[in-house]
Length: 245
Length: 214
Image 1: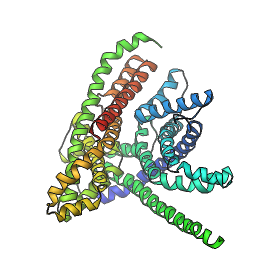
Image 2: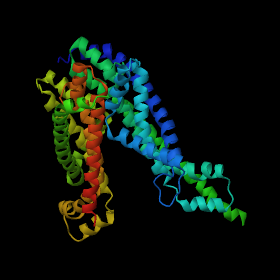
Image 3: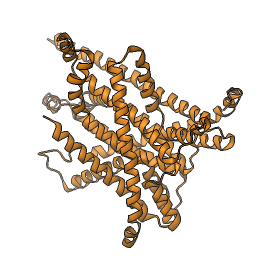
Image 4: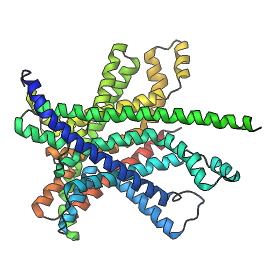
């Protein structure tokens, strides 16, 4: 590898890498949104499942069991395997799945399992006593969720959500195997042309690092704002009884 | 679905599962050693070495494993280091796992109340003694569930080594599929193999955790 001309080569292919990075970003954003929607749905139908002393309808039991198997499977097998199954198994029945939707769906289904468990842990961060107290005060159910559960759950799950977003972005590299031209595949194509794997893959790594670093920084900043703002509002609430009395 | 195919493919899958386990267990052992050393360096080493810790854990955790794999398999040949798929995958997975294990040990070490460290220091224990006698016994016990979880992640990441043709479970499956044009049975076996492996690890992790908790 000659250092001379490195800069010229970099200015030649780095723009292509950034184009690939845009695809990586849109894939990951789509997957995180699908994962959040599906994950919260799964949590909603299995919320009471497996808790002691709760009687469930047969429907709730079936839903709860399905979600627990789903979560165990998607967290217990590699994303690459899930992706290959989703892409090649329909082909056995002569159904052709286009790569990009297959990739985004596989990543979304995978992330749903992780986000369901993150949200479940968040739900348990609010002690039942608070809900009973709110109920005793006659606060309507939707207000209990909006003003008592949601702020605490958001604060509790935020760090895990940020780290899940980083994991999703990183795991998106494997979708290059089913011919989605995201960042990694773009890098492979450039190497196939110029035979300089070391510098191309290191540049590629730097772009991934830039993206995961940005998610981390923005996530931490937003997380700090979340806690700061809710501290401020809880001070107002703490001040209330004084003003009322 | 044809049940006889499962029997037919079983020997190939057994061998492939061994390869998967070989790679993951090497990564586990190497990663634990590296992670422990990095954490010990951060805790007891000189201050000027700390940026090494942050650079290593930051960069290695911020880049997809596939990119590490490409650099160690394709990239290193450019500086005259040619590794076969197994060596490249092991190197990449040890370094990747090591970064996560470093952070696991850091989290556990930092969760020991600082009062204990101050008290030990007031009693005249050296920095190294505090590390080995006060922090390590508590922190290591605490790290067991996290290590089990990370081991599951390493087993799953090892599937990516199939892309550089290391003959583990995923590679073997794609090979069987392309040779026999049978899709459903091999992919089912593949998913079940990983599921079984990761469930076993989580069981073992919980058993070790129970055995170690006071």
